[in-house]
Each structure stands twice: as C-alpha cells, then as structure tokens.
Amino acid sequence: MSLQLTIATRESRLALWQANHVKDLLESKGHQVKLLGMTTLGDQILDQPLSKVGGKGLFIKELEIALENGSAQLAVHSLKDVPMDLPEGFELACILSREDPRDAWVSNQYPSIQSLPIGAVVGTSSLRRTVLIRALRPDLKIEPLRGNLDTRLKKLDDGHYQGIVLAAAGLKRLGLTERIRAEFDPSVMLPAAGQGAIGIEISSNRPELVKILRELNDFETSVRVYAERGVSRAMGGSCSMPLAAHATLAGNTLSIKAAWGDHLIEKPSLIFASDQCTIDPSDSNILNTATSLGELVANKLIAQGARPVTTH
Image 1 (cartoon, rainbow, N blue to C red):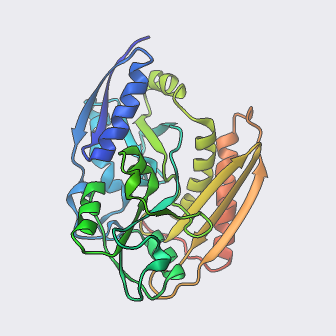
Image 2: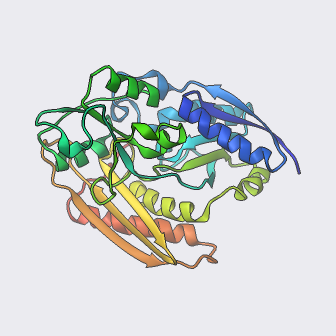
Image 3: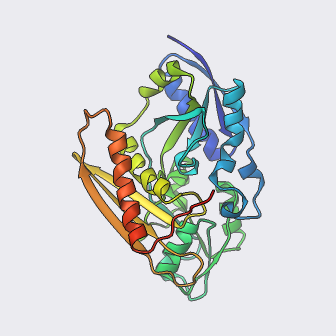
C-alpha cells in the first residue's frame, strides 16, 4: 500500500538532512513524501540554556501540533532531543540506524581539550558536557553555546571560544567531518542517551504507519537506546539533568554505563554505574528488558548520591 505522507521537521540544516534521509527511505518503499518545515520555540529562544526555559520538549511541540491537526503524519527528531515520556496520543514508532554517538572536539587552534591553556574558554550549554568537562579540566571556563550547528561553528570561528564540544553525528551527517579535531572516547566523555540516533514520532491512532515504519527500524540501535533512555526516565531525565548514558550490544549481551555529576559545583565528582544483561532477540518484550536494565543502572546512581529530578 502506497501512502502520501508529510514529514514535520525543524528547519535547521541538520534537521532537514535527517528529514530528507527519512523521505528518501520512505520513497524507496514506494510512498510519496513531502516535508513541512517548522520553527520551534527551542529554535527561537537562543539566549538561555534549555534547562531554564522548558527543556527538550521545546524542540518538538510545534511538530506534535502538526501531527495532531493532520498537516503532517510523521515528525523526525534527533532522538536526544525527545523527552523521555511523550504526551498522551503520541508514540515513538521507529528508530533509525545510529550514527557515531560520541562527542567531538572542535577547535581552530587546539588539537584536543587536553592541549588547551589554563583558563581557556570552552562552549557548551549541555549540563552533561559541563560536568564531564569540569571533571577532565576543572581549570577551564565554560560558556553557554546555543543555536543550530552552523550558528555554533560561526561563534567558534568568530573567536568567542577556544573550542566547543558538539555531537560527532551532526558534523558527519552534514559533511563537516574535517571540523572534528578529536573524538572523545566514551570512557572519557560519556555520550547522552540517544545521541546519534534519529527517531520518528507519530500519532498513536495510526496503526498503518507503525507497520510501514517497522521496516525502517534498526534493532540494535533501538535496544541500546531504550536502555539509555531507561536510565534517563528513571532519573527524571531532561536537559536539566547532568546525566550521561551509553549502551553497547555485543552478541546477545547488552551493557550500559551511566554517569552523573553535580553541575552546581565547580569541581564535581562524577558518579558512575554500569550493568549488563543477556537478551533474546526473539523476545517480544526485549525493549522492556532494555529499559529495565537502564532503570537498574539509574537506581545504582541514586544509591551513590545522584539526585533525580522529581518535578518537570
């Protein structure tokens, strides 16, 4: 069955790349697809950290309205921007194969964060990256960095920072790999839950879309990401949370490591937790198993002193 579909997407260059990627995949299956570009509140508020103005949901609300009123049937998101719990009436129907989940060091002067002089300025508005950078180099000055990928790179090029930390996936997808001076090993800079993955959101009352999108879903990415998001959900995760979670799948062994730090102190001591389990690919509850593993690791963090967010 061939369908005519509209994809709601943010209008940044990276968001449009991701939406066009989904469009190409669906068109290869015989569907007719067009894009509906939208500007979200998260794109408009650039002078404050997301943690202070409403969180990740600011990037998807307008897209969900388009799904609700029928002007679009799909919304394509960077999965790390998607809240852990979607509003009633919406569901995450598909997760595509993941790009590189690591963070990237970008600088015009310095080959690595270790090579920065004392007191150098690093740009990021991520609480996760803030605590991880402080743990690596407590002498550095961390300044806010908001805006789409091109805006962030321009601010670096204009000399506002000696270096910035970005998701490697976005740079690679836009053909900007040459801007990456170094990629952080996850043992040094643990990624965000879902980083590098693309998620497709739909209205819950569209079973015909679930069937179509199932063909695009990547099994390994989904299992890993559900475990990571399980950590975040149990911690009340949002961009207000200085939390990292990264899962790997080797054969039938799902492993996950998470880290939390207190962003309110200058030299945070990071709290780490990890665990693993054996999964059965034929198990219809495999995503629940992955989520439960993430929740277990979150409880280990809390037992060591990590503070979950209890209000939203």
